[in-house]
Length: 462
Image (cartoon, rainbow, N blue to C red; front, side, top):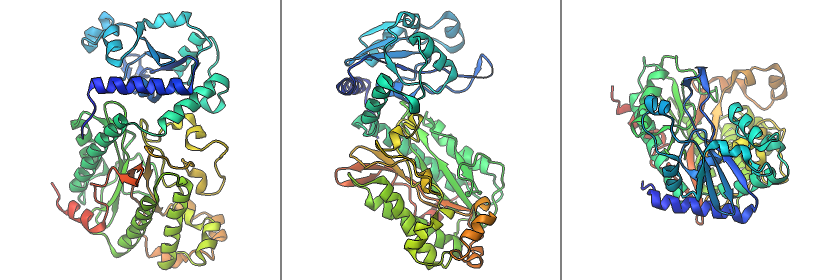
């Protein structure tokens, strides 16, 4: 996993700025953001720079801004204060950082007060930084979904650039993926009855920390896989349960990986767990096989839905004609989310821009159950990185809803479904790069077949 050196990266950043100039001819300002306070000013949350800032500057600079004007970069940031050096140690000067990122000029942040208010920008979802943006540009900055004029033109230009990744970005995604795969194997080997979810999470995140990376998002490590974004870690693992772990690393440059695996606590899938796991795996494999330039991502989502529906009919859980079941969204009772999303500098890349990034121009989210949660509705293109993550879940609030029971009473064999009560949730997720030949699974070194996963879990390091 070779990561570009600073000279190569400087050339990459220059090329990105030139690419923006070809799409957007006006001045643009990007803010890095700040670290909000937790409960008193000096106790802050971990800082994460705006991804749009990182795309053109790469360094996670606090309280900084950059101007891009026809490919030229101007950096606005303050030199380290004596107080910051006292508490945080010596930091590079403004001029040193300007040299590192290839800036053409560098000035204090206060110089933004005299700045041309006509520059375009993208609102940072941080109230402190957002207020600064409005004050310096002497206007209210609209949310991306409400942007108009130059701001909207800038957003569309940035989307056009960030949908496909350059070699530097792909190298860093590979780096994050490598660490993520190691973390998942460590989590599997740390699993045993009697341990807590927190212990498995700690084992996985310790690998990420040891590689000087951070978690790309709040880790999901749970025996309650039916809670899609579970943030609780207090449950004790019981024999016969499944652990669902959705954990990904973020490289120092901000590029991320996103992996989910599901494995048995006792190292052995039950017969019912294996049947449903293999069904999800079949959907996962079929979707990856379908990835290629020009393919509509929504079609891949429907392929996952079709495979899952066909399998549930074969298992006797769903009953009826597959096409009719799909038309009635019966599959969404067990697969209520989209098949995946864009991946890049964010785990849901550019989702701060709302559906402007995820949905092609002229397309809107469906209001259909399940399909309305699809995060990406575009044709795939070379250099795009997406996740493929079908799943099966038994969500009590869905399945026990009286209206749902009545609507689907003839489509679900409830007695047969009850025989699979040892499956709360199963998800299998990989990171996939769209290539000229089809797809490259960047996380393929992490096994997802039942037998191999059982072997890893049983190689416990207790």
